[in-house]
Image (tube, rainbow, N blue to C red; front, top):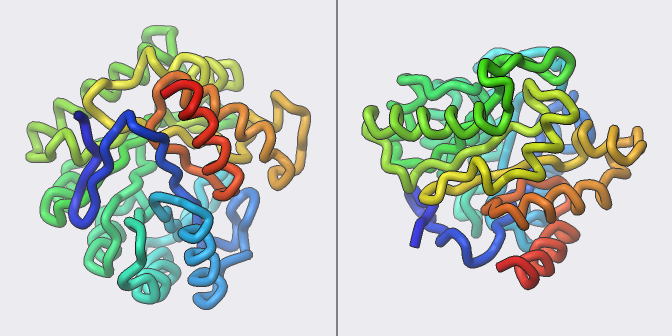
Length: 276
């Protein structure tokens, strides 16, 4: 049976959908910016995420919303490290959401077990960090565009482009000494795709999921849900999010990245009962 594993964690794939709870330490994230910028609030939210049934905690120190202002690695670490230190002995694996190798290295040294890399490349620098730490590595497809200016795919087909990226990344990772079981892929819903392309990726998960690797899908509260549902307030997009993620589970998604953990866990268990 295929697994997603790294130091201190191992998840069997295909038995049930895993839920990754989001903890943003940023002042400017699109739906919860500013809520968890102080350490006590962040740690309280982390404990709540675990209590609500999440399998993984994803902690981020830089927003990646459309139009975000990048921060320096130093600022990112200033936000992350006090919280990671407070999470010592946390009952579920901690993932750090970053594309900076130096941030990933420090976060892994502080106790994180997974790098959630939204950089859209399989950089040699990040590969070295992951390999040396024995960490899990989530690699996202971005296509090089953003939500306002979607990428143009050479094949003219976003599903084919995403699958090719995953296959090429798997080969590059192997060449850089990364075990396949350490890798998880993410199609990057909302990153360099049009609305129609995002919908197609949610509908056709089975067409780009690699059989031996974990697949993470994250549509939580995103613009694709807002456009389809007509809901302009990201905090009110739970129902649409659950619909999108159920479609992803039907296609074989292994991990869902979510803001609303308790509702997402319940929906995932129901979808698992139907589809798995």
